[in-house]
Length: 424
Image (cartoon, rainbow, N blue to C red; front, top):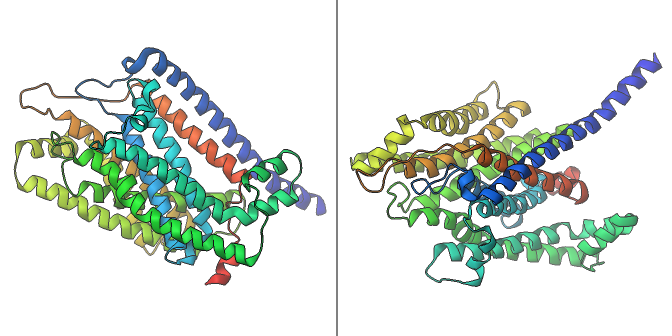
């Protein structure tokens, strides 16, 4: 009787290792495919894409604003813990900050791919035009990344010191570098870390809202020739959708990471996160409905043409299938239905559904507004990403997932749940 039990135990213990191998192989395959597509992009230029003078922005810009939103949303969720003391979410606090950093790296990589002259990417920083929203955005991004790294360091500093003391070989050298020479584990130093984390959090809130993702929305809002973008609500909608997608992604990451490692999933934390993302989603949807309603109520030709393109045009499947069904109807049902609101699996489906839905939202922001010609009588634009755009995007996303996986293995991103619960 002991032998079968032993085999079962071995099978359970090796299962996470098998999943990890499959995960790494998948990432390397996607990264290799993406590398080939990026090579074509570099050698053939934008001719390898389906972008044109009529459709100058496409998949890469849609993914760029998606990942900037993920970053801003993840960071703002972390501020609920650091600044406002919502300790029930502390189990995802470190992951939130690290996700924000990785998402910004991925977002800026997409911008790099979209540049006609990739070798001139530093020009926006070197030649600062004070009247350019884009120039301000680039500098806000840099300041924001520095703030994220500093805040994450303060959050994990004491654990890095312990890892440096306990590790050997290359890991000891790595943690020695990451501690930046710090060796203080005293309670006073921890209180000092928390004080500075709160200060950085206060600085980061307006930076993330007005400078980072609100500023990204402003990039679109100031384009007067595109009536759908030229709205004061646009920056606000960008921030709210960032909160939706960031909360949803962190909910999914928490559930999956716990399940893969066969650790306890705190259903109370998952339900609280799900209710928070539902709250943000409902406000976001309300503002979007106001935006569509006001645009339609005026019966202006340009407004009606964009709405018709979005709701009933060639790409309407993205609006109804991704933005409305995956991004709103399905997750709200799973979160509030009596049959599913207590299920971790259902809430995981709701969270990843929202993430996919927000990708649809980003495509629906970029593409329909460009399809409608600026001047009546001019050719109508049309766009669907080329294989180079799709596969290179897959590679960039794989790069981000690989960076996160490496960070999750080497950095102390997991909060002790028992310690967190003792705070409540």
